[in-house]
Image 1 (cartoon, one colour):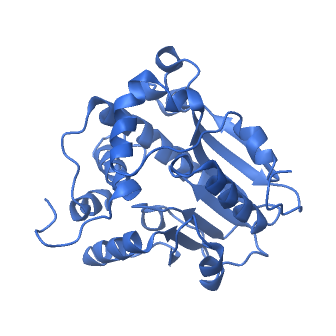
Image 2 (image 1 turned 30 degrees about the vertical axis):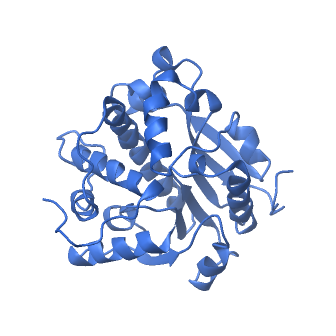
Length: 289
């Protein structure tokens, strides 16, 4: 199935990368040993306009997207089990966790993303008759601008713990914009809040085998602009106690092959960081200490 001629598709740029991720989630959902089930992934990819003829690098990336999805699914489940009933997905893209995960009663989930993407996604979900499994609120906002104001206006309570997810976006921001995002997240987070985040190190950005992908991303105004060398120290500067999971360990835990794009035997010191953290002080810093 493809998007009907004349209907608007997903906005261009970074937002188009969400289609590749949705297609990976759709493929995973057809497996008998699937790590998650996402019945909305295929319809969203159809509505957005599928990306055909993926490169070898794109197909390898799908293995990472599947493991990453399950990793962050589990981190959000753990977060709400520990108490927070507010969940914020920054740069939510075509995320469907509000619909496909089981949420405790009283959970409020906020999806923040660009206005055009939000508009597209809401129509596509309405066309499917999709019903969320929690209290879901969409917040049109640009992470490079004042996104906390509309988020607070939508009902986020900064006096209560929050579970944050920042998946697949920080590498597209400049270091300055990324620092502002983390600063604002930290300012809004009381002790006991949780944070799950993905980033990469400079060695990964500069991998020879990533050059074709980096070139394609740059040509669609979706270049990677930042990297982090020590995610635990990075987040500690904002008042978070973090732990890092390597994809090789995650793959073994889940009974899957190590993705080639994350296998140390192939990529050496290059790393995609999968991080979860707890807010365990009350400094609320706006910038790293």
